[in-house]
Each structure stands twice: as C-alpha cells, then as structure tokens.
Length: 179
Image (cartoon, rainbow, N blue to C red; front, side, top):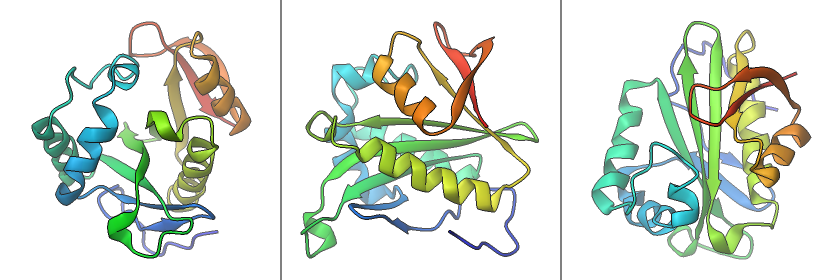
C-alpha cells in the first residue's frame, strides 16, 4: 500500500512503483524512443483513438510532454525480472491516467506485442489503481473499452470494473467504473 501525504489534485508527480516484475514510472522525454518502438504497432494505434498511425518519435515526445500540465500522466511499465540495470529493461506497456472533472480519474493502457498475454497489464494497472485509490480516495476511477475487445474487457472486470450501461466519450466504447 502507498501512503501519500498532502496529495495535490495533480498527476504530475506520481511516484515510481516496483512490482514483482515491473518498474512503473511516469515517462520522461528520454523514454520517447522506447515509447515509439512499442506504440508504432497497428494493433495499438488502431485500438487507442488518440494515437496516430504511424506513431513517430515526435508523437512519442509530444505524448510525454502532455503530462506537464498535471491533468494526464503516462506511466511506462518496464520489465525488471532478471535485468540488473535500467538501461537493459524493456518497455512492456503504458498506462495512462487522466483527471476528468472534479471527481473522476480515467485510466487506459496498452501493452506491446511481445509482452501480451503474460500478465503485465494486470500487474501494472493493479499497482496504479492502488496508488490512485490511496492518493485520490474520493475520486471515482473509470475506463472506456470496446465490448468487442474481450481481453481488455475481461482484464477490467478482473480489476473490479463494472459496465455502467453508458456509452463512453470515444466511438464504440462503453464506460466502466471501478467498484
């Protein structure tokens, strides 16, 4: 569990999190090449509506810089099992956190092809949900997902999200909230 004292209404200073297999931290501009490599995948850019295809180095830098306002934060989930130094770690996935209005935080995520099906999304999102719940206990946590994205929908349900019955803001997505 995380203890955050004097938490402000910003995502700009989220701390680094270590899990059994991942080091999770807000992305830095120096991470842009790894972000571009992971994200420039049609399976990812087609599923995440705000990501352009192709996803360039400039797109990666712009996405990372968008976190400076404190309303959004993209965290990289880096593999750490058996890897002695940070320079050798691989970016397995990304979790986005977004302040929405006065009482809501939205999360979203994507995982690279080589890391899919290995439980990294569950591990990363679960750790971030614990952090957000501790830091922002009064905020509702939501996600948007296409019902046809069976893997992501199932992961969200496993993490305690339930379908609200409402359409999401993005085309073809439903709004889920965490109980």
